[in-house]
Length: 332
Figure 1 (tube, helix red, strand yellow):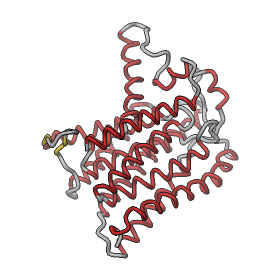
Figure 2 (tube, one colour):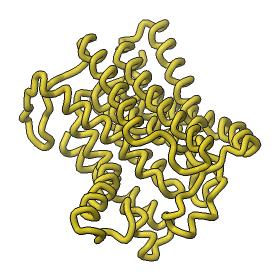
Figure 3 (cartoon, helix red, strand yellow):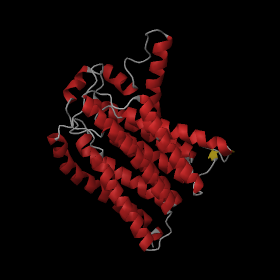
Figure 4 (cartoon, helix red, strand yellow):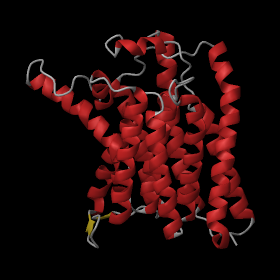
């Protein structure tokens, strides 16, 4: 029955999560304001960002809760109705996403306690993220839901990496999750790029009838679209590390579950490019003794320094993200 009306059910799920996120935002936003859970802006950042200081952060909670409630309802419904539903990998992806959201929550909370834009140290975050990713990969492997073969996009060739696949998974998952975190630097930027990737994921799942991936994708799309109501410029609240780490984990979790990690990385390659710009800037700065490739990294701030406004940059990034999603579609 579910497969007969799969498209309609996905659209319904999308709108439910969207509405729940908008409602949750109206409830959570005044609470964050009352608790003075405000963003602390880096002094070395663009000067015009100082006006954003105090804007409520940790707003990712407003789409994480509806997302989880909707996915719990989907799982219960499918099991009770006797639908063919892969509960174990579906649940493991949710656990991986929640684990990263918790890491982000601790980081956000530490920033608030310290009253500065630095929470957990880089090493602390990486250790926790590798533990979360390692546990996820291990459980997926133990339950027989992990492939060690990586298909090369645009070809029918698959590379069987055997045990070497595990470190590859770890590096890609942790790297991508951090990439979504780095991209969350402008009003609506991470949300808009994530929306394009989630749209791709939903269409991909619909085309291949991968029910579990489809539900996760449309819930993510509904969540970030609902959050954009409050996050688009000028932002009323930010998602914080709580939300940005969650986004990356859902995308990568779906890529692992679908057995198409490389394709999902291509779809989300704008996140990767933004992270690489920051990494290249740091390395070049050290090697050249103070010279820079970009006016400011990550590259979305470079465009700001060049005179672009936030809406223009968000539209550019979302447009480029759509191009990568099209490439991923034809490469799948």
